[in-house]
Image (cartoon, rainbow, N blue to C red):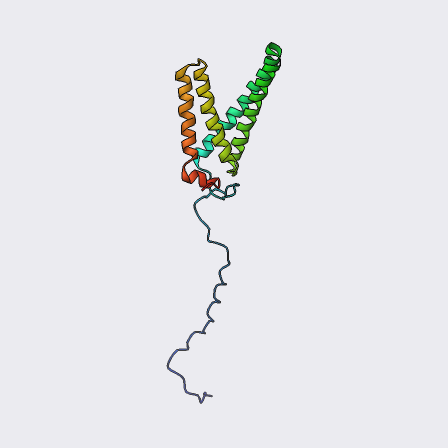
Length: 168
């Protein structure tokens, strides 16, 4: 028997698939970066430590450690050779070495108190070099000391450096 429904000459359409679900909303995480950035500094300003301050901190740390060694030698040897006067000079050398180490740590971490300590240490070193020249020390070697600590004073008094230590 034959089917009474007429045959449709057009082919049947393929089944319709539902559209894919939309992508979920982006999260609040920032996009990944391909460049490395150092962590924020431990200082109060949160700014990165400049290379010059890093160099000053390292040199002050080395000078402080060597000053401690020399201070102990001067304290022990000076006490044996010169008594109380030798002990006082040894204690003074130890105190100066401790201040130098304190400046090294403060400059490394950009502490606000490190800037005036660095200025006082540099100015004191210039004054001490001048006293040594008046006492008969070599002018050439002390002039080098004066020029180097003068450069440190100049650098520490730059507006950007002062601002890092909160001295703007």
